[in-house]
Length: 171
Image (cartoon, rainbow, N blue to C red):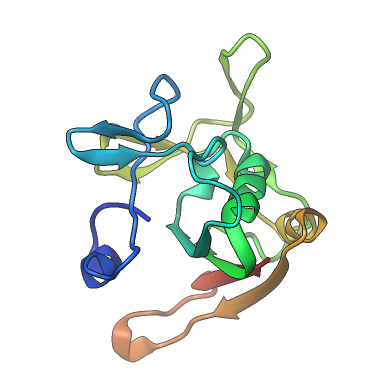
């Protein structure tokens, strides 16, 4: 879970709550940067079966190998544990859309015109590697998750539109 925002403000005083940010591949998970825990979703520092709940909000599209990140999250969740997350989801397509990848020699390869999302840690924004589709649901099932998809709609709270989706992946 990120270290700012309304949800963090609500959860931060709960017993057992851990939040982190991602500061780059050159920093090892479990390192503190300016007092904030750094964790890399594809190489988490936590032991197996550690968490009951993992929350990530609009993060996985910025991970070069999101299914490796999902496998890591699965590893650190207890049986019955849940990963609650949001991510851009193309409801009308079958295959994920890849925008960029990291080559074998570590170089960034753009497969489409680069796209960036607003990121308070990076003035240039966070690079989008992938937008998800039905393929994600299949890949999560292969990992071992049971997935529920919730379409949120609450005009009173400003939640409208076709892509207000939250995923619940259960180990």
